[in-house]
Length: 397
Image: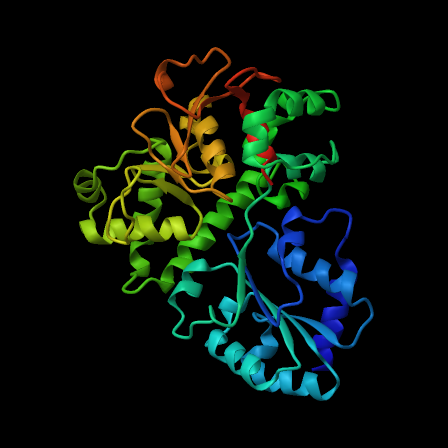
């Protein structure tokens, strides 16, 4: 136990409080049981430790534990918490919970039996969280951390610390908002960098090796996280890579499941199941036509990569401006809004707002006659009427 306490203090001391995600302030930190999930590399661990450092500096009542620590090969979590509680401990910050067997059951027991203990836990494997036998949803307040928005990237890269805006504010007042931003920075100067390497916070470690590290993250997801799928055969990992490459090479991909199944060599139902879980692992985003129900074994109508940075890793030879634009907009919108495929235009937001994506010369041709329809135009600093700068949608959070 003493070794865990010492490790906790070292880790807490090492984390910086210079940049804290906007997401931090959306969490009700007073809840007794909080779960923070999200794709690998989005900054869950940093946020966890930042809260510990800012709220419990030098306190023996709080401890950070990573559940992949070798200590837990010979000790249970419940046993460890009992000892921590006996020493006056009250606040548990548990990282990488998905790497600990039966973690959900033990956390449930701790929550039920020790009402004076508060727990915050993180997990990278959303798939594992979905497959747990013990449902924590009635006890835990769950949050999902996305990657950096374009606005957060600008702050993290020390370009500027600017406010976020709601979608309604952007749609109704985009000219004034973008003019205020442009008076402070040149957003287009930084936008291409964000599309290439700005989504995951670890870009600050080294831009030169960023794509290599992101490729390693993708491999970790496929080789480790997908094993939680019922009936998943590790020997088929190569087919998952093949599937992901095909999707990335043809983004936005309109799947013909029968042909794709034949090409990869796996059963149709297995293929649709893999697509479903690739989305849960936050490697792809799928869209269905408006009004169409979503189920595990139903193919989506269109598939994108989850964020534009993945385009440069999974199929760099097929990266094009149109793909990046649509992937970016869908990624930024899905954090707070429901997106479906409209009959006209590219995206239908919350079943009421239509967006068409394009370059600076994009016209209203595809959305003519529609109410609440807008163009998200790249390569412009300030828009007018219903034409909005594409980069401004990166200020939604």
